[in-house]
Image (cartoon, rainbow, N blue to C red):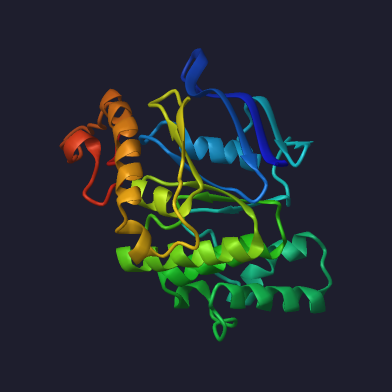
Amino acid sequence: MEASIDIRNVSKSYSAGGDASGLLALDNISLRVDKGEFLAILGPSGCGKSTLLHVIAGLAPARGQLFVHGAEITGPGLDRGVVFQDYALFPWRTVLDNVAFGLEMKKVPRPERAKLARKFVALVGLEGFEDRYPSQLSGGMKQRVAIARALAFDPEVLLMDEPFAALDAQTREILQAELLRIWERTEKTIVFVTHSIDEAVFLAQRVVVLTARPGRIKRTVAIDLPWPRTASDVRSSPQFAQIRHQIWELLAEEVEKAQPVILQGEPAPTRGRNGFASDGSLTEVL
């Protein structure tokens, strides 16, 4: 199968004061993502999950080589759409104008731009809200706009950095199901960063587990669950529980290696057994 993303020996360091060697965030990552694949990335906080996504997006220069459909990544590009946790919408633009932003960057003529923007507003279920502003939308609706904006200019790859983390549980599950519907319809390659094991197992075809910092690939787990997936059927199945437990065991060791953040005057964050919260997500550790 054709590779959509090809990551070869990528390492990323951040400067740390006068230390020339800096802080090593990612160490020798090599990974291939097939065209049309849904890949999730899991790991303890601070392991470099978001950094890896930003490197793929061209937002963070790194050592090594990265290719999207054979073209080497040298910076941001319209072949990659990015969805962030905090929506990153333009508050002075309506829903329709936010969705059309990437089309403007591609110099798409105004009539075609409006038609395409309306198509993707409908795709994410926001018909009737085209003229609303972000301040008039719920968190889930804002994230739908962000997804529509990232898809509207037809990128090769959709990069998603914990896009549902700030949402309530019910909205999160609804948008997970919506994302699968959109993925199946558009056949985009998706790389999805999350802290939630349940979310990764429900959404992805493969899950990449990263080690504690510096981030290295510890294991790639194939998610052998049937399609189409619905939350009620999949999450209650023995196969889901088995895969979830397998990934939980892989991550538990890495969470224990990571040290909890202890701020002066504040207690260390509360963690469940082996650093996991009750919803299957990792609690905050460095």
